[in-house]
Image (tube, rainbow, N blue to C red; front, side, top):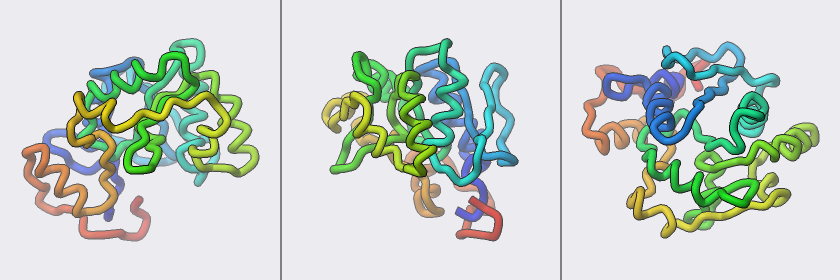
Length: 199
């Protein structure tokens, strides 16, 4: 991207601030899991900030840290990434609703699971820890081990017609397109591509 996604300007906010705000309109509490030493923008009071225990373990590591912190406080958690600025709170609520009776509920669109737009019961923590211990770091392996509800596109499109909640900002073109779809102007110096030390 050319700079850390979490701190990218998105209107009056940074991208992570926007995602936290949108998630917080649908569920609470909100917990952010970041890499050790990762720079984060200022977040609202009450938002928990946790750090990965081990580096370079992908989303499963963050999920394990977050679910451990939430165990005993909630039954399940909606998990997302910091780079989904078009997230629709009503889609979060819909996925939570459809997760009832399952260990996980994941949108399955275009033949692909979207594990970072999914709900996980805190009881899957043991299965996640076992996958991490075996160096099996893909969330798809979790879905094979727990009772998973795959959610079709047509179960979500009444609350998010374009399924923009599933659109990650993976590069400068995606970032500029997301700003435009939100009616926002790009910053004076948009990202221009990878630089050393940027994620």
